[in-house]
Length: 254
Ligand SMILES: [Ca+2]
Image (cartoon, rainbow, N blue to C red; front, side):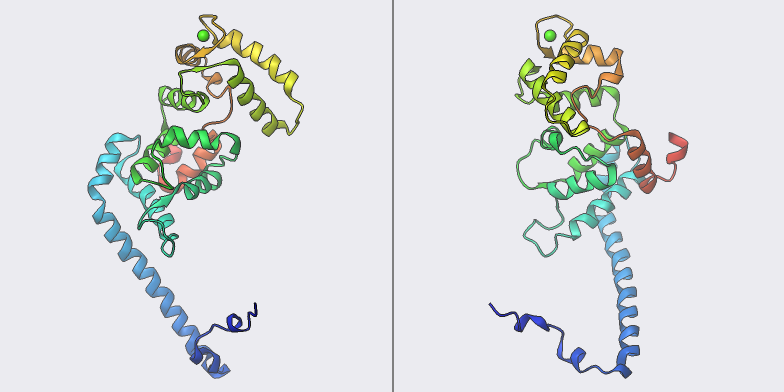
């Protein structure tokens, strides 16, 4: 296939444009830029007006103030604008975009658990996430209580959805997190040793499986064990850094 046709797609007037016109062009470009900025703030105002009630509802349901929800929804809005020429439903953010966002803004880079993390955050099928899910997820990640985090992590680890983490699930989870941490592939023996140690700590009723009750009781006493089977939450440093971008009082709160 020849790409001669595609090689010059500039409009005719631009092709005829000589050096003497470059000044005008720059002025036009600058004007266009101002217009864009103006459009942005007008759009933002419209967006804010449209979602005023939702902001209040989400502020009630989350650990954010309405000002913080507002700031976070603007980020959602900006992400959704990237989809303007795609077939994604107008104004929606895709799960893939949110995944990229968690990767870059909150440094959640361990891909082995990401699918499970998404199932825990959003049981809805489909490519996109709603503003509600987005705010609830960030509320958990940035401000979640220990109990909220316990529910989330257990959901992630309970891959069979039957309320217990059996030995083979432990093996799978620990092997994955060990391989992604150390890069070593022959982790089997270390994983078996880890299962012994962890079972001793977590399996309170000694039936060989970790139930939600086992896990919750242990982690409430010893929060260090929250992410014992792999990272399901952002680390403190990323939370702090990201919080500063939408909440002006971050340093006072930490
Ligand atoms: Ca048990």
